[in-house]
Amino acid sequence: MNSHASGTAKRTLIVLLAAFVLPVALAYLFLTQGWYQGGTTNRGQLLDGLSYQTLSVANPAERQWQIITLLPDQCRAACQDRLAAVRQAHIALGREQDRVVPLVYLTEHSDPTLQAQLTEHQLAAAPASPALQAALAGHALVVVDPLGQWVMAYPAVADQPAQIQQGRDLLADLRKLLKLSRIG
Image 1 (cartoon, rainbow, N blue to C red):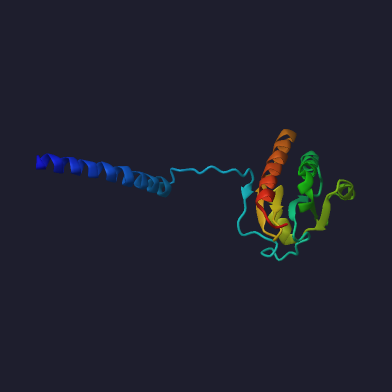
Image 2 (tube, rainbow, N blue to C red):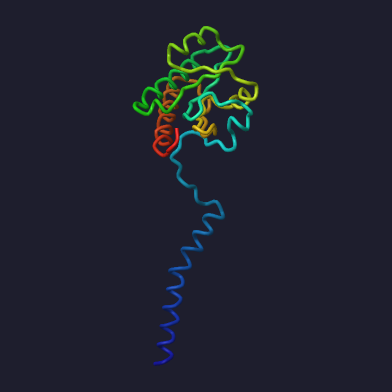
């Protein structure tokens, strides 16, 4: 009878250890082996370590969120669609649009016919330094926080449906950022 009770006690101890240790061991394996892919809610690419300070460029709209893009030498249909998406996303922010500045950086070779239209479409313009041009070369749109940190980037897309979707993605990300941000 004593051996039966000690066998049951051992079995109970093993079951309890397995119930508490096994999930921790499995979680450790999933995380260390890269088997778990966490869900993300952002639609743009998160940027790390890029800011106006690291580029040695003055922040043209301090204490405000920014959507920045670079106006190319010739602004074809994709470029015009991108500017329209920025404009529409800014308008769609509603009461939060005062916190965000849509900003178009201009080079010395930027399309002169479009430069005049920027103020008409309520897009701010600023001159782009060579360092800023190089940083924006790989991105069509970049979201900048009020402290000057480049937070999120969106790649260049070619066709109009993709531009519309990118505008929706930008708007969704901006709404989340503005909701969570206590600055700007």
